[in-house]
Length: 508
Image (cartoon, rainbow, N blue to C red):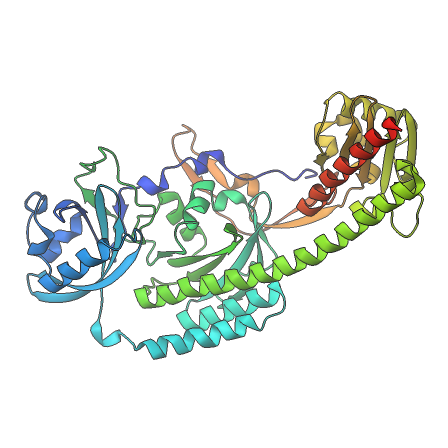
């Protein structure tokens, strides 16, 4: 294969994952109105109360929990905090009282309450928990590179949780994820260095990771617990379970887990500047439940890992931006010194436009005069390419790293111009400059054939994930290294400077 496709899926990304309308079976769900009367619930709540579903609807929550817990809940609701408010409460069951961990999600018209049974004897002291976190966060804080952060993180998280395998993968600009760190039991397949298509974590799932730090599936063979009534009486629709840990799992993902030969999984988000940078993916060969305490540690460490990675990347970015800006300023000084754009940008060997944009060739046209430096297409090819670029009537910086996909003639000279950066200077006389980059042939090791990531049945009504994760190699040609965000910002800055310079020259 010669082209690098975008394997994100509009179809998967449109699935209503937040309206799945069922929960996993390791907990219970209650939805109460603002008066704390039950208006909707998971069907397994009958196990706790001994009452029929119909009898529970419109019952006061006060009938089932201790008064002191009810007062505590009311106080937390009044704080104004809306999401994932934790508290312990005693739920009065038929056979006595049991301790539950409750998570409150406070909405305008109703409150969602997630319940998980807790064993009091397993509740450890804050000092014990803090000691574990402090050790791991200190180890991560000493890391000097993103790779080192990832390696430490998965090692410590595996030791802490006991998962059979943990890996971290980083998203690229097309949302494909490449495994950059891994530690696994020998019974699990190794994926280090392999890339998984964006459709494995579709758009809507990625959006939910911005709301939820982690996602636990304790048993892929769990019994889905439905909600009663099916339609929420307040919204007259399926209830939004986006923020709920207990939210049920789409069947296609459970099938995906089966194909990977794992029975339990947990994913932890890694953020960079409030965007999803990567995921830490945990796998277990048998069902595995993690307590809320341990999940909370994972949530905390998600913040620690995200913060450290952001600090390292921002530091690297600052250094790169500083270097680029220094070159841009030096070029501006040379343009003024020579009183000529082409002379200033091309003639000095210490710094020139090629170095500024990591380009292999450049064309500059000012007042109808052409100047080139480095590797550029042959004269006829260059003329035709200029005609194509000018036909776009571009008044802002334009770039592509896959020119032949947009302009067929460029397929004839990929080693010279697989990537172009077009910087308009002044549209009226047709002044502009174009930087070129050669193809950078890339070999991608996919974890399974990405073209088979989603397979529809013959009738088109159902679909299944791929069944194989065996190594599938792709060679990408006729694509250059992408123009970075920093380079494009400097290109826009240079465009403004050159436009102002030409205006001043015209006024002299």
